[in-house]
Every structure is written in C-alpha cells, then in structure tokens.
Image 1: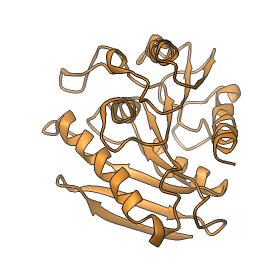
Image 2: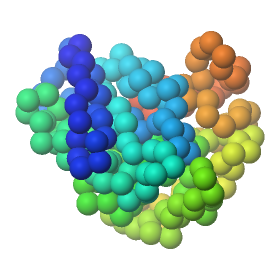
Image 3: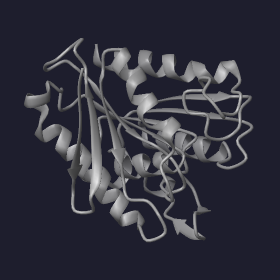
Image 4: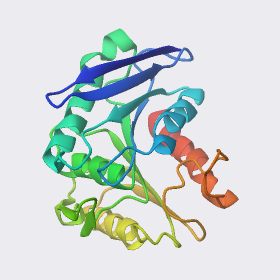
Length: 234
C-alpha cells in the first residue's frame, strides 16, 4: 500500500490516498470518502476507516479533508470536492487509477457535499454512494443553511447507491427517499437500502471505543455497496 497526504485546491484542503497493491491500471476503481460532521468538523469514523475498508476490497481509496468550521463556506467545500476529483484524475496514470471509475461516498453533511458535486458540479464522480445524506432543506452548524440538492437532480447525475435508517432523528430518512425519487424521475440508475434500526452517524457500524452500539443489520450496507460497484465496473 502506498499512503500519502497532499494539499489540493485553493482553500488548503487535504487529500489522503491509499493506493492498493492488489490492482493497478486501467480497470482499478477508486473510492473518494467524504466524511460528515455538519460542515463544522470531520467525523473520524466516516473517514480513514471507510477508506481502509474499501482498500481491503481491492479499490484505491482517498479521503477528502474539506473546508469546515464557523468561517468556512459551502462554496469552499464544493471547490475542495471539485479539486479532489480533478487531482485524482490528473494523476490517474501515476497512481494506477482508472480515471472514469471514480466513486464518491459521503455521509451526512459529507453526503450533501458529494450529492451536490454529483448534481451541479463540473468534475463529477462516476458513481455516488450516499449514507444518511442531507439532500433537502436543513440548518446545520452555527445556524447556517445549506442549499437543497433534490431540486437540481437531472439525467446528468451519476448512478447512485443510497442507504439510511428509519430511526435517524438528525437527518430523517425523507432526505434519502426524496433524492431517490428525484433520481427515478430523471431516469438515473440507483439502489436504495433503508434499514429499520439505527441512529445517525453509524459509519461502518463496526465496534469502536466510545461508539454507539450499532444494529448488526446496518453494517450490511458496506458489502452491498462493494457488490454494487463491482457489478458496475467488472
């Protein structure tokens, strides 16, 4: 495994890469991880652990440390996401990455950022994976509002894998269902999984110190997402 971190874009964002030894070249897909945190911080459990899980499945994996905090704006975060996708594709030959097999997975506010890039961005990923993502009107962090994504969904959106829980009280499941309905209306391929049990922010739902005990069923989203990506790219 080749592991590195570098600064990208104009806002000082960081991109951490984990390049797989299992496969390099034109057919090797990549997953760019965008952690949540309400645009105020970045959730550790939705960052490196997710990237390393995809790495173990033979994908190249990256984590985007985008602009967050009281002084950061959504526009800056979107610039960071654009820069990350552009950087990965720019170094495709050097890193052994397939430039058109790049998936972006975002959680919560990170899901909002990923969905925004996939919907209105210039450098869009080739597939989206959205975990309990914000997609409709909501107020986060310091009372700031962030633009809803659903009204802008169109046939240019990439295929999308969505997962959420019915018990999420922070980002209700209606966000996921609304995005799925918009994709359906636009004729965009998607796969949707709504698990009955589980609070917000479960990530991989694997045991870790201080973490909420996760319902075992929710952890199935990861294997389902791997199979979904492999069906698309193999």
